[in-house]
Length: 341
Image 1 (cartoon, one colour):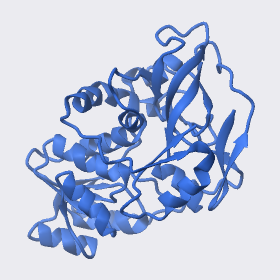
Image 2 (spheres, rainbow, N blue to C red):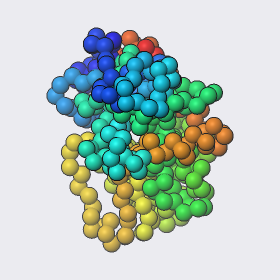
Image 3 (cartoon, one colour):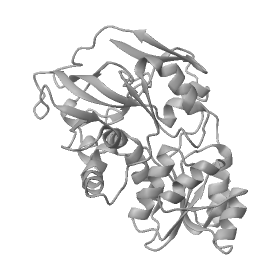
Image 4 (cartoon, rainbow, N blue to C red):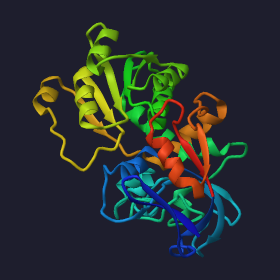
């Protein structure tokens, strides 16, 4: 098999590796039909998360089941499946909630040094019945890939923002996850979604999804758009110090900041006193991907929640270095890349 590895900032290779086998009696092996580059992968590429070693990457993938262990009950050889980006044991009380973050043994993420990487020709998947979902008939690969992580993350971020029906939410960062958050917030009843990103073309994509673009310094722009009141909630899909500061300052007193971006490894100087006096709720979310499927699959199949226009480019897996370089430009033209083995 082959898999994509990040050797250091800006250094991507496609390397050979041993063919995978089912990781235990409840595991499976998937032949990858399509994978995707996530903003979280870019933290390794950019050097924000430097583990000091080369790392196989990718946690968004789908494919065809090649092998299963003897304890796999629901998944069959030949099934086309998508796999949740975050894994749990599938047997404990935490996993029974559908949220592997609550796994008693601790959650694990594909392609992060914990589990095998999804940007590969084949992947070993533990707890297959829990981790996998058969791809519904008629669902395209792009939509299915979004259900592995990005759409689930945007949806969870919008839910945890607790925007009141008819309320106003700001989304900071309009990459794939941010655009999914824009659409999710509108589907969940927000009357206004203010779209914040330094790239005009990305703001325009959000406008095409139903948002209102705001320009200029984030806090001032949001305050101007809300008559000085601030927004009911902010969804921060970036999570750098500057966006966290802006989120906490731009939300109204009593509002919620919902963080779905991945911060770096440095401590964040939380303005705790200001947050306390303004009664702001700060919520940080790794999506309960498995639990979102029951809500998201019907919504996307009915057309109530759009998934079009998020993927903009497709590369062969062997061209992963060029694919990562394209994403790293953060251009309005390249939002999300699909990789084909």
